[in-house]
Image 1 (cartoon, rainbow, N blue to C red):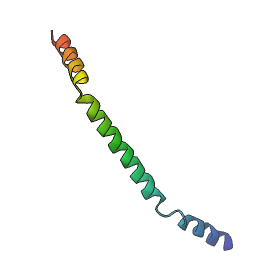
Image 2 (image 1 turned 180 degrees about the horizontal axis):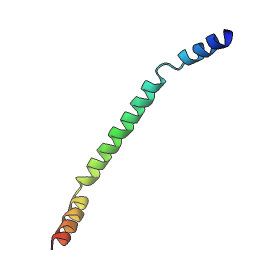
Image 3 (image 1 turned 135 degrees about the vertical axis):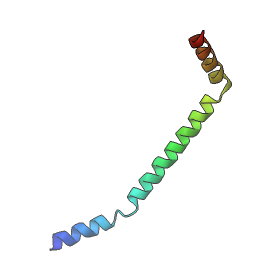
Length: 58
C-alpha cells in the first residue's frame, strides 16, 4: 500500500508539465509560422516563385 501512495504522490508532482510542454510547442509553432510568412512574402522569394510559375506555364 505504501508503494502505491508513493507512486501517486510522485505523479501529482508533475501536474502542469503537459500544459507547459503544450505552451512551448505552440510558441515554437507560431514562431516558425511567422518566419515562414516573412520568407514567403519577401521580394526575392516572390520574384523566384513568379519566375517559376511563369516558366511552368510557358
